[in-house]
Amino acid sequence: MKTSQLYGGIEAGGTKFVCVVASDPGRVVEEIRFPTTTPEETLQNSIKFFQPFVESGQIHSIGIGCFGPLDLDPTSPTYGHILSTPKPHWSNADVLGTLRRALNVKLTLDMDVNVAGLGEHIWGASRGLDPSLYLTIGTGIGGGYIKDGKPLIGMLNLEMGHLRIPHDRELDPFNGSCPFHRDCFEGLASGPAIEKRLGVTGAVVPEEDAFWDIEVEYIASALMNYILTLSPKKIILGGGVMQREFLFPKIRQRVRALLNGYVVHKNLLETIDQYIVPPALGNRSGSMGAVALASLTA
Ligand code: ADP
Ligand code: ZN
Image (cartoon, rainbow, N blue to C red; front, side, top):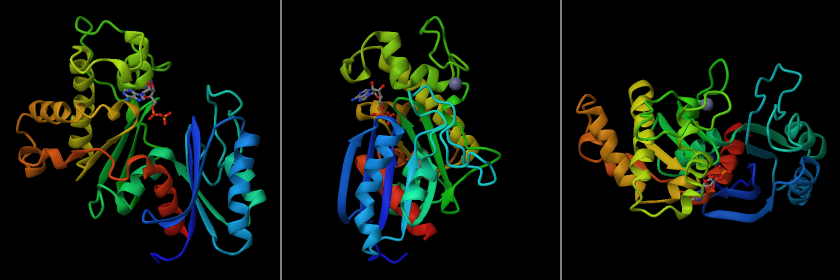
């Protein structure tokens, strides 16, 4: 990768968009954030931001990490569109096509979690470690698994948030909030699941509240499954819920207890505090990941 070359990056989130022109996290030439409103307005704002950089020849490639569900099959007629989403106005929005018609550059699109995982792999907590896993626990739960330097895609995208995990209904009678599976991982442990269960956002639930042990159990169960099936060399936990930093030591301890010595590796037995970690790029994993995506595909 040529580090001096500038690239465009878009973190296209359901709540906000972040657009950057940068070569790496140490050299961000310009950055803008705006709320996600209608596709027309939001994509137009992005186009306006990049246009001068494209016209002056400073950038030739833009990466986009977008919220989903997304059509990422290049042979599909709706490639680059958002599919059916509860988010008003965004079902069938042609994200890639709209940008492509307005900006004469190479555009590369991937799922938000894949792109954030890539950012962490190139510049962040999982630098030099392959494979690695980036998991967000926010409005939804989703994972980006970086293998051989790129996000793993199978028949379709991975849907790591919808894992089925043990649910002790005596301890936690909440039915779950996933419209498809009810008490899958996301249905039990996402930000909205916490809010629905407790009536308040997880941001204000006191650290001493017994609920957090339940949340930790769900996250640790899911991580155990990922460790056993994907064997990542680093696990990065991001998203709104993981802003509660006291969760990290509890999750590490519970993962170790659940695995019960079965996976024999120092990452789990000795240095688990460096194995399950927050994103090193903070809230820039997504936007810098988009820059990394642009640079890798330029
Ligand atoms: P998004 O998933 O939309 O990109 P976030 O990752 O910030 O955005 O996730 C938003 C969710 O995380 C909301 O459900 C919110 O209640 C929850 N959340 C945000 N901040 C915190 C916090 N400090 N502690 C616990 N939950 C939080
Ligand atoms: Zn589900």
